[in-house]
Image (cartoon, rainbow over all chains, first blue to last red; front, side, top):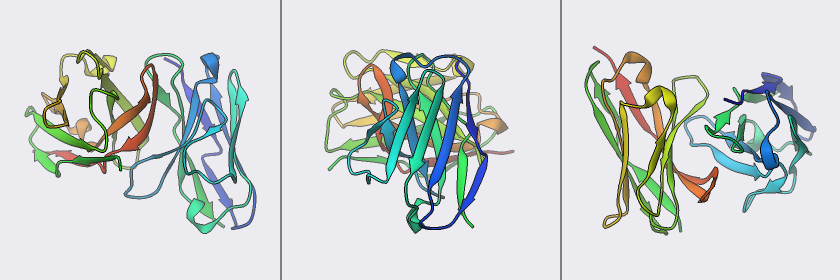
Length: 108
Length: 120
């Protein structure tokens, strides 16, 4: 199975700042089939990005994804208060689909 | 609009079975596949498997094979997850999710989650 490692585990930032979240795969993710999800406490995950860089419907353009192969990045250009949550990367290039362990984005 | 509404919380004893339902609206279960994903308390996300929209074929996570069954009732638009021989480490929130595009297992709509607690 492809193992995804996210860093950092926790990121403390202030509203208005830029957030950079990393996801590294144990082997190359075919076709850059890498997605990002946001999860808030008590809620289901929400799809943000698919195909490494395509924003899902209704996702603000302050969210962007980049990367290829084994290294992927989620960037939030200017943090809004509602962006503080846990973020997961997920690969779907090879079965079984697997998730990273998550990055918690908290208010500094 | 697309919605997935799951059944309520369950408390089960070790060795028992649980069946969770997921009613879809705004689309049909014959147009999109369904996956199940679980999340143990304070932990990350774990994929459990999928069911095809076309022929009911299923594919389960290796660690769950033999204990899990996913089905759909297309007449009512409801998907089901059954998990048998429950253990304490099956305690989790169970989510159903719509596969956005068949063949690419990413999920654009999710149910609200069902907490299953396994305790003696």
